[in-house]
Every structure is written in structure tokens, then in C-alpha cells.
Amino acid sequence: MNVSAIFTALLIIGGLGIFVGVFLGIAGIAFRVEVDEKEEAILKALPGNNCGGCGYPGCAGLAEAISKGNAPVNQCPVGGEPVAKEIAKIMGTEAGDSVKKVAFVACKAHCDDITFDYNYYGVEDCRMLSFVPNGGPKSCNQGCLGFGTCASVCPFDAIHVVDGVAVVDRDKCKACGKCVSVCPKHLISLIPYDAEYAVACSNTQKGPVAMKQCKAACIGCSLCAKNCPNDAVKIENFNATIDYEKCANCGTCLEKCPRKSIVKTSGQ
Image 1 (tube, one colour):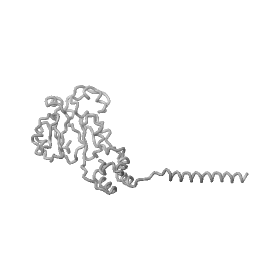
Image 2: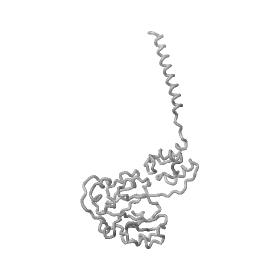
Image 3: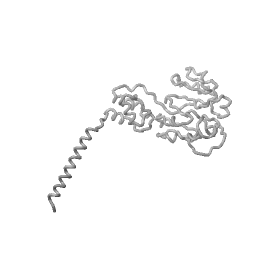
Image 4: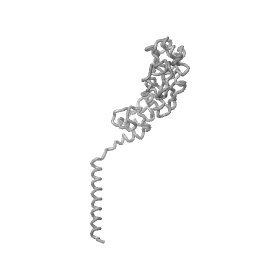
């Protein structure tokens, strides 16, 4: 056994190990990424759903934007006011007023309410029906298609199709907005959670046409607008709209609507 050869090999291996260690240490210092402590704290405060409802690529993207002052502390729709206040403390600022919102489907046309032009057999995805005649088999091409694409993208299991129309579970909804962006008919919007009344119809056809297409369609009769004591209801394109900044939740619009197109949101 050549002792000197073994000793030489050990020296070479040991020297190489020391060199690699020193090199990695220098590289770690040279290429070190500074960690923003505020950004890390904000990320921990966020709910971690990564739903994208804030408009940023996940919670990490939002945390970075808030820490740099590019997004408000109450940008997270899922965390709501509690998370906004916690982030405000981290940023040393005020959370400001935040209005809790919930998704609402502007259609209440169940299977028995709507007329059909033909039977549809194909891919059950609402986005695909833009390629078929009239945008779908229902006579009203502005109503809910009922194939549940909105439900498939909801990360909170807060929306389901019931008797041909999408219905939101207000207690589960976090107002992330995914259902809003995926609906090809643009029927879903985020409204104040405290709003007690909403127009559950998006049909803009004239009254006689709308009545033929759907039993629950708004016909633009203006009775809701004329009787609203707060001037909160307007008729646009033969369809009623509610200004929630003016609405006092008195319920007059619902009482006067002959078509019952205006509904209590808690009973959608």
C-alpha cells in the first residue's frame, strides 16, 4: 500500500472541498437576494387561496405589489376587512373602508320559465355555445346557459346550477371574481353583500319579445323606477338597473315589479 499516494489523494480531495465551500460562500454573498420583510409578513397575512381575484398572479404577487405601494392594503377580496386591517398594520397605514361583496347571477329563468328553440347535444361548456346557433338552445340568448362553467372554476364551491340556472351560495362566496370573468354572457357581477335586492334578468329585448322568450324576463315597464323613493332604479335598454349607492333596501321595486324580475338577494 502506497501511503504517500493515499495521503496525496486526501489532500487533493480536502483541498477541493475547501475550494468549493469557499466558492459557494462567495457566490451566496454575491448573488444574495434581499428579502423584503414587509412582503413576507403580508404574504403570511393573506389567506393563501391564490385565486387571482385580486388581479395579481396569486397571493405572492399581491404581497409584492402591496409592499411596493402598487396595490391598496384592502385589495384581497377573499380576506376582506380583517386581512386588510392586518396588512394595514404591517404597512403602517389605514385600511380604509372596504365593502364586502358577493357574486350575483342576473338571471332567474329556470327550465319551466324559458322557451327553447332546439335540443342541444354537445360539449356542456358555456364558453363553447358561442359557436352554436343563437348562442345556445334557449330562446333568450342573454340568459344563463346552465352548463355550470362558472361552477367549475369557483375555488370555494360557492356556485351551482339549479334547475337550469346558476345560483350563488352567499355564505361560501368570497367575491374572487372567477365566475364573473368566465361567464360568456356576462351575467355575473359583484354586488354589495348588504344589498337586499337585485335585478335577476339581463334581457334587453322589448317587452313583447322578452315575454315570449321567458316568463321571468324584465320587460322594461318602468314601474320599479317610477315608484322608487330614492331614484335608485333606472331603465336602460328595456332592462332595470339598481344604483346601490342610492338604494335604501326599501323593497318597493320588488313589490311593484309585475314580472318578479327583481328579487331578494338572500333568496336567489
